[in-house]
Image (cartoon, rainbow, N blue to C red):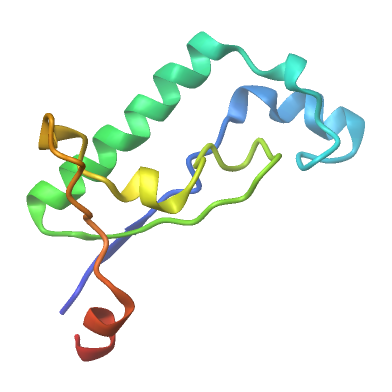
Amino acid sequence: MRVWYFSEMAYHPAWEQGLKRGSLRVVLPNSNFDPKVGHGLLNRYLDEFALCDEVGLDITVNEHHSTSTCLTVSVPMAACDPGAGDQAGKASVPRYADRQSA
């Protein structure tokens, strides 16, 4: 059996302000984003992906631009192995064909 891990990688500190404006998507100004908090959250999510990979869980990654519900800049960036050192990065997400055969 395959077990998958999924996270929206949310920037939840902006949700209160976003909900006051009526949306968490697109119309939320970037002034609601604290780079230090965002840095910490993004690293936490990438650490979670690395832990899942270590224990054998498959990882699902998505992206939503201009939203506080998803910090993923791009799927390939989130799916790379940051522990690969100077290498170009090892993809942690299987190709579509590989998933078909599983």
